[in-house]
Image 1 (spheres, rainbow, N blue to C red):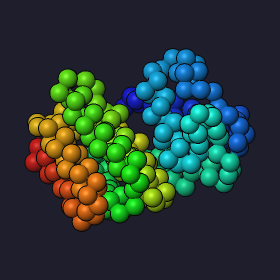
Image 2: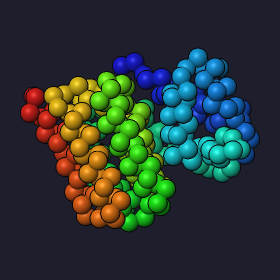
Image 3: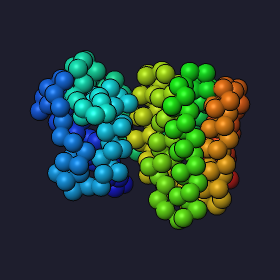
Length: 223
């Protein structure tokens, strides 16, 4: 299966950091420089760096730059064996998300900052606008779920979700093609964002569970 652009640059940047090309605390090239270097869009570079930051391999400091992680121990990837496995089935990956994401949504409703809540609402609105205009909304979809993970303030759970998100990137594009899935996703995202804004952890958990279970049910019904 062909890798997405952000997956390719993610793996290459990760390897360059692990090999010692950029020492802990050393500044990486800017996003624009990396995009030019790899001949990729800024969107792909931004997504790759966001995932690296969620794994604490880089630190993105606004106004200062992108830095290699200061703790060399964090460069050891505890889930590397999982990444090396054969492509998992879409149902397996959705089941993994079902086990993780409802709790992340509940924790996010309890722990997220006001700025994080606003970002989650804005991402829900942006995805709705992108779908309405027929634009690619994949990165926004991924970022919505990742923002919730970060708002949950549990780095280990966020890293677990990052692994599953990496493995299921292509599968998410496939589920997006299923009947009415885009409209359902927009509705679920809006309702989840509202539940988080209202600090309703039980509702956020229930809606995220329903969102992912609905995808599982749709796939299973198609045989």
